[in-house]
Amino acid sequence: MIKRIWLLLSLTLFIIGAHQTFIQRLRARSSAILTGVGTVLADNPSMTVRLEGVESQPVRVVVDTNLSMPTDSKMLKEPGQTVLMTCSTDEHIAQALKDAGADIHMMPYCNTSVDLASVLQQLSDMQINDVLLETGATLSGAMLRAGLIDELIIYMAPILMGNNARGLFSLPGLESMQDKIELDITDQRLVGQDIRITAKVRHLGS
Image (cartoon, rainbow, N blue to C red; front, side):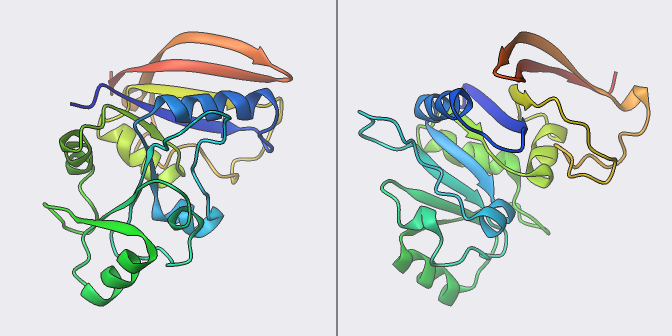
């Protein structure tokens, strides 16, 4: 059973020093790190724990509806398991990714995208209890709207940006206070010049 899903968000341009150490410790506490294929294509992350003395890595899980992940992605070369949750039935692409080191999980209830509740059920079946979500606005917004995120960890830098800057969540339709998503802040502290906010998701739309 999934016990907790953390979402790590950053409004900081560069994550360094104490930020990076905290992130690495949070990864080490997690059974799995969940991301979307858009993040893989944009950033090609390794998503590994880089701390001395860590012997095993959390499972890296990529929501990849159409098996768009390149076979030379960094995380496929790293120690540990990389799992792709997909709706694609393309056996040729699937075999190429398997040969590169990926485990392919065909998901149920596929329509135009992977069903996120089914992803968490699969992870629960794999005895994965704590999931760290490190991803972009599309997947984080979908997870939040589906009520699948328990806790947010937000790094906020003392920087102002315009309304066309990339947001933390893609949440179409949240245009009035009655649509709001409420949070309970459980911790806030200065980390250098940044603020780290930890908050639990309370409920939707009230």
